Image (cartoon, rainbow, N blue to C red; front, side):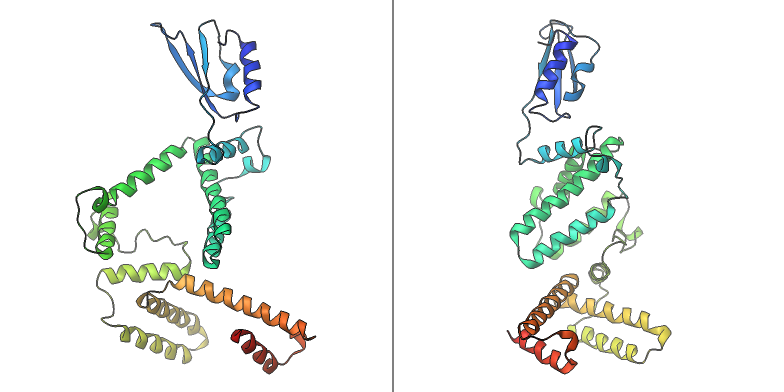
Length: 318
């Protein structure tokens, strides 16, 4: 029972030792009577109610488990609160946009490295960015975390009628076609009235965006009948690049990259992942070459290109 504001303040201070300030609590007045009143608030607001009496009861639901998303969200809410972190309070969707992109790439790095411990950590950092943006939206009255989750759950169920409904599919390609049709229907527009490339984010990495553009074009039938045509196109674009003048080099080089991405699609290779892997292999081999040179009392800066080439092949062979 909370029969006075003074008692409510004491109870609040005690509970703050175990619960987050934003932990939801419930005040019930006149329980069991016709005049029952239920008021929900956050713990830090407990003693701000206008009146308390002998009929006022406090209900405190269990705190989220330490490993739950709710507990994670409570921490983010506290960081953004007046008693939280000044830096976190100052941030906006735009100011931490690069953080979201950076964390997503670090997840990809962990996947490429096959490092599950690091992947676990990086997924947590990415989730923190999701909760950060969600909390800012909640403060602005736009949406809250339950709405984000509910929307995704509803979308997954709706876009998998072959799992949660009575639609039958024969293969994954039919699943993709159904997916695109469902997305078009969700937007309230018929597929033929929309461009085939609508919805592909402009901010996507260029290789990934090129591969998605080509995949969508192929699903509409605009594709080579066989892989030989793709190989020929790559060689054709390379020849055009060789003969290009200075002002033509950039667009011709872009055409080479675009044709190579199309070849990757035909070979069932993810172009973005392939280039990331190549970057990683080069860095690892170059570092191994530098360490090997140091172990032999040499410096790369003082070696000839021929000497570095031999060292490179030695490292590559190992």
